[in-house]
Length: 304
Image 1 (cartoon, helix red, strand yellow):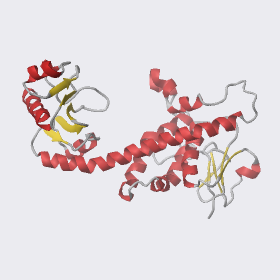
Image 2: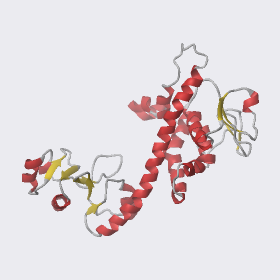
Image 3: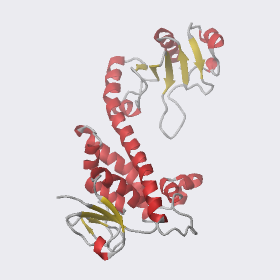
């Protein structure tokens, strides 16, 4: 079956159909994006996918609206927007088109749905208020995308369509960046798990490069590891491990005597030749060689 048209509504736009368009234009790059409320366009046909308009949700007919009553709901009763409906139907194919490894597709599909799609669904349906973001409410993705709409007195009759098309590559870049990050974390996990095994009972985890490691530490239950070392350019870094993504607290801080010191002063404080820098907040230190950073790591473990 050939898809020739991707049809969504005309006029002002919201995050859900804009994000849906990013998914669908990746899968159907030769299809014409048609913004219309004319009945001839929003009536299902084999050559089109209709979303966020049309008053119906029918996967077989390729129409994905959520404004009708009853509206489509997730298994847990939370509402779908058109983005959630499109992601549920086409997300896995989209991940395949982005060359996500087959073994990671299901996990990344679900993670992206939870982290990125569901918040859009909830906001679009009024299931949560933007105010839940507090002082950051004006910086949520729907709010930022809303700022790309034409101003109220723009008399250009094509202003909405032009703004929509200008916003589309922006949301495409954001989605693809998020998927790349999730895919990279999946790659990193196997590397970190192997490094954890190699570390054994040591409190120091050595990695071949900077990479996400938190999920692998949790998966392995490696609570004994306090610090991570890895090369960075010609230097080596020693870093603490945050207790969670919601805090700056660490399993262990670098020694207080090192805080804010550099070069000779830091070498004198820690007794390690080649020590170069320690952040005042004691979450990262730098040395000019692996030998030096490992000595610093051993001292940090002893003091912790």
